[in-house]
Amino acid sequence: MSDAPLIDIKNVTHTFQTKSGPLQVLDDLNISVREGGFCAVVGPSGCGKSTLTRLVAGLLKPDEGEVWLHGERVKSPRSTVGMAFQNPVLLEWRTILQNVMLPMEIVPTKTTKKQQEERARYLLALVGLEGFEDKRPSELSGGMRQRASLCRSLVHQPDVLILDEPFGALDAFTREDLWQTMHKVKEKEPFTGLLITHDLRESIFLADQVVVLSGRPARAQYVLDVPMDGPRDLEHLYTHEAAE
Ligand code: ADP
Ligand code: MG
Image (tube, rainbow, N blue to C red; front, side):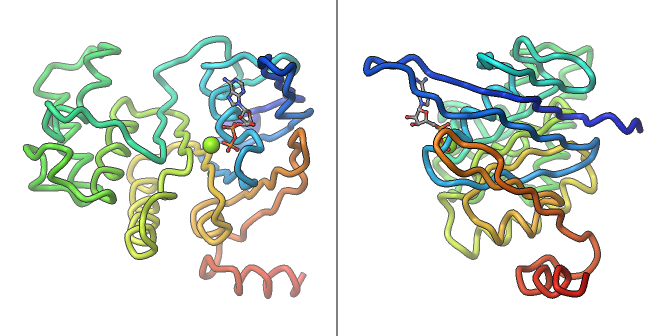
């Protein structure tokens, strides 16, 4: 493991050209995430969080600054980046298993169909969807669909997993169940994560680094390191900070 950050966002500025003129959303943003790290980005709606994920995924090009992954400058999308979103798009005419296997059809792998199916089944079991492989997306609850979408984003063993408010539309109980699942997934399927959320509790429960974006255009205002020991809740974090 090298010391160089796996995700390195360097002085990134982004402006959209809109009908009513240029709209600058990100201003000189710097975020580094070490290999195996899990960074949460918190900020108000419309501040540019999804724009940031698209820049990291190579779906957009920053007009200033650079994004580096694994020591390589990002210029185009790559299959080593997995993404999951608030409203997962699962294809209704396919089963859950077939939906999870979809990325392996789009970006071919050297594995056999049987190995691909085994991988998809393993991931579904990991997130608690064993027995639902042959169901259609509409037969699943919102939380279950989000679990299936998580499996689909993990199927290629991504180095980087980008989660753009994946739990935002779920009720509080389902959301907390998914947080537990995320911890289990991270342990079994290591990745370097970027989690977009507006839930501070969620960021502290899941991430080891929290970056808060604010201002217009948005800049990283402060970075909080979440201690890895002890319970991951707000109260513990405050007492930990106070003790230092
Ligand atoms: P967030 O995810 O933090 O809610 P977004 O990154 O989606 O915010 O959007 C940031 C701002 O950029 C918003 O004002 C949005 O309307 C604008 N925006 C996003 N994508 C585009 C686009 N393709 N063209 C023009 N404006 C955009
Ligand atoms: Mg967004």
